Length: 98
Length: 134
Image (tube, rainbow over all chains, first blue to last red):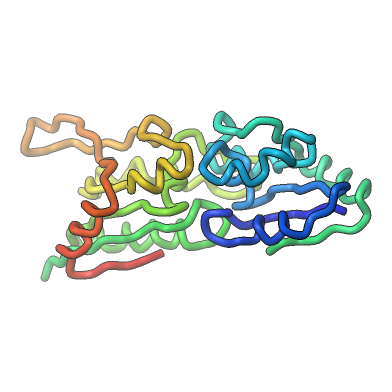
C-alpha cells in the first residue's frame, strides 16, 4: 500500500497517524508540506527506521520549492511526478493522510 | 496619517497553504500606508525565508524573492524564532540574506533578519498595537 502525507509534522499529526497504522510492506511518499519531514530535524527519528529500509519517498519538486534539498535526512528517495505514478501503479491501493 | 505598530506572525511554510503569500500581500499594503511594520517567523513560517527555494517543479510562483524588496519599503524588522529554527535543523545561515539601507548611517547595508528567543519575541509582540497571525 502507498501512503501519501501532505502536511508538516510540526503542524499536524498526519505522519504520526500514518506511522501508527502502516504495515511492513507499505511505503510512504511525502508531498507538499509533508516533505518538511524529509529534512533533517527533530521529527526525523519518526521515519528514520522506515527510511533505512528504503520505504520513504519525497516528491522532488516540493523539496526544491521549500529550499531543503541540501538538508535531506538519510535514505530518503527523491522522485518526480512520473515516479509518483509508478508508485501508485506498483502499490495499487493508496491512502492520502490529508 | 496615524501610524500604528503592526506585527505579522508568519506561522506556515511557503506553498502548502495560501497563508504565506497572503501575509506578504497584506504586509506590503501596510507598508504602502506607512505603518510601522514588523514580521515574525515562527513554527513552519521559518521556511518562508529559507535560501534557495525553487518552485519550478511545482508550477507555482517563487514569491520568496519578494522578501528582498521589503527593505525598500522600510520594513527592516524581521524576527525569527530561534527555537523554531533549531527544531527544524536550520540556522541563520540557511536563511536569505535580507538587508536594508540605513539612512541614518550613510545608507549602510544592514541585516533585516534577527534570530531571537520566543521570550524576546513575546516581549516585542506585547509592544505592538496590532498583531496579525497567518
